[in-house]
Length: 351
Ligand SMILES: C[S@@+](CC[C@H](N)C(=O)[O-])C[C@H]1O[C@@H](n2cnc3c(N)ncnc32)[C@H](O)[C@@H]1O
Ligand code: SF4
Image 1 (tube, rainbow, N blue to C red):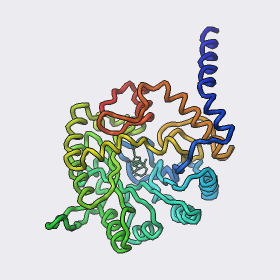
Image 2 (cartoon, protein in one colour):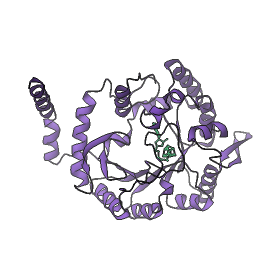
Image 3 (cartoon, protein in one colour):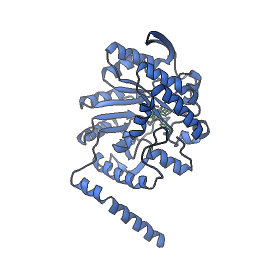
Image 4 (tube, rainbow, N blue to C red):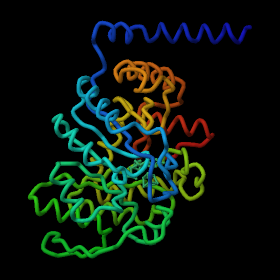
């Protein structure tokens, strides 16, 4: 009885604390939406040891292409100008991916895609570049063996050599063929900034990350660098993933020497955009971000706007209970989802 009363009082206090937000929302002062994070498929041809989604076979409840388009339209009406197409699996394995990209471009919205790049041949690279898709290519490592171990897959990529000029000298590196195709397609189109790299910091690839950083610096590629969210396979493989604080610190200093202090200041200063914008999972559930559920409903039953509002309220309440939610790790960027899963699994945050 007392527990019930306590819970009721906590709820009431939370409601009162959120009152200014509720009132602003009712008066039409809605949180500014800039992008939509839309997961397209659960299917994946890799089994990354760090994957928080546990991607693999397609689920049978994924939104249809028309349902996805309706979500895109609603997001545009809410102000979104960019759609981030991600998994929970590999977006380029989604059979309707280019139909969806074309639809988004027709809405005059920008597309961002995160891909493992295993299926990118020259034709696919040309299609992505022709549609101005900002493509983040997974670059766990430049060492094929480390890459394979990270991906849980043998011979995940064909590796090809790539020669580029660097100051007065020229350098040759081996790259996954998909990345090389993207770079060639971008060069042939005479554009810049569409091809980017993304990597996760784990124990397994840690020693090879300075080479990744150097390549990105040489080729002027934006590098999206993250520490792992400890969920899904990342928690199953925690021993191969987690760095202790001394390891994070020494890696940080190695990377600062290549990328500079400013890169990391920027990284820490900018919270992950997904948590401040609508995130829709493959089955249409609204989430708090790519990895954290909201439990507030599904776009098949309610409008994106009403669900996003409920999710933002839920997020405010959940984030208040986290030990630290200001988005700043000591060296790398952290986020409320990282804090949430650490708390849930009793893990220290050493980044
Ligand atoms: C789930 S993946 C789906 C897209 C694509 N298959 C890929 O790997 O890029 C989306 C993004 O989540 C990142 N990711 C996967 N597991 C993660 C984890 N445990 N913590 C943080 N990011 C993770 C991936 O590196 C990728 O940038
Ligand atoms: S991180 Fe991406 S490529 Fe790796 S298993 Fe998950 S969805 Fe697949």
